[in-house]
Length: 132
Image (cartoon, rainbow, N blue to C red; front, side, top):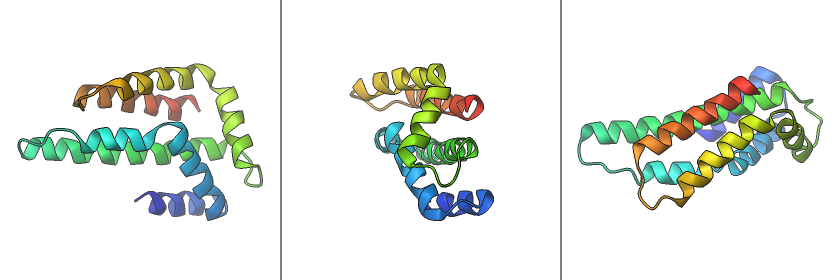
């Protein structure tokens, strides 16, 4: 699904797919998306509703990452260096990113996967789209 998002964003923005991919995956690492997806995969599945909630969280995380990538690339020039694109984005949105970093750090410390912290993390991540 991540690669499909990259292709779609490249088509929408007319950025080279390789550059979009580098930005997208750099953002994923920067925002600890693999850790969030791992937490979502560890959510309990005692019934159908748990399974649906787990799938919804995973889908929301990847969709939100795609939207953040759209917002970040909208602020940048396609020829810019990916590290510089991320640095500029971080410099332009320090408070929103600090809130996300704090929430993600707290979630990473949790031993048990729970839906509530993941929902809060998603809300924080969505704030980056609005704030970017």
